[in-house]
Image (cartoon, rainbow, N blue to C red; front, side, top):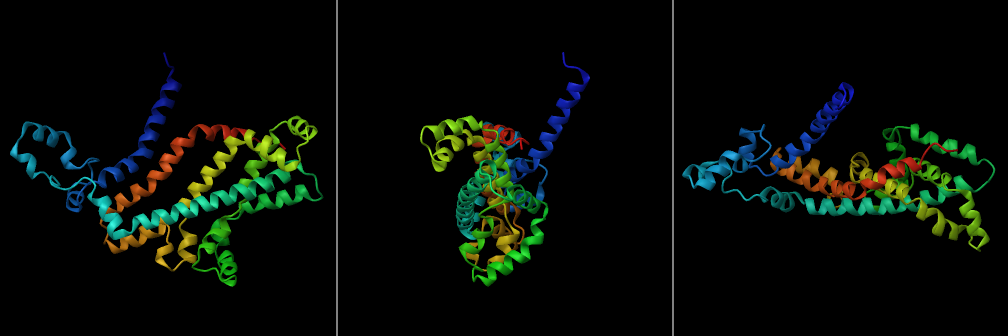
Length: 296
């Protein structure tokens, strides 16, 4: 029998889960409503035609079932309209391209930097690492204008490279992977070196396979962060064809005069890839973070 503390903890967890999940359930349910139905009934999570009363009336063959709001409205119509009128498919493709390219670049550059900080001895290493970590204390908004000036001077405003370059490396990724590499026994690398492996061979055949959870964790965090970026694309882009989903949704809302069911449908399509990615990689998250302990 659970004690009072365990019961309170479970109740708190359930309440917290409901509070966090409810906005997503509301968004998903509302994405299947008509605009009129949403304006008349915002509280229910399900469209009227999928509520128990309507389902029962339909099953009985009652004439009243035909008079329910949205009875003849196709279930997926808001999603079709979001793609047709809001160009959500283009924005989704842009976000996916940006997220994949930045994630791959972050993994490549951060792996090299983290391995150098973890295993290579050179003068000023600890000072340089401390300076790198100090950049994590700077709010991203502070760097928005300096980054824009650099991109503008390079002639990369309103280009793919202007979006990608500032995100190709990050202090958090270097820190996360360095800590993971430090937790790998040095004896394994020494044994590989005795067998004839060089630094690249050790990194590729020994270090990276043992750091798989940390790599997946960093990749997931980077992908999610890039997918959700808003301020930087809004500042550096003016061509609507290059907009990611986050920026595109804001313009779609303005163009549709707050047609919330369509906006919710577009938002649901934008959230679906992240939810699927998280569910696929969640078993690596705890391992990736725990492997990145505070070993120095």
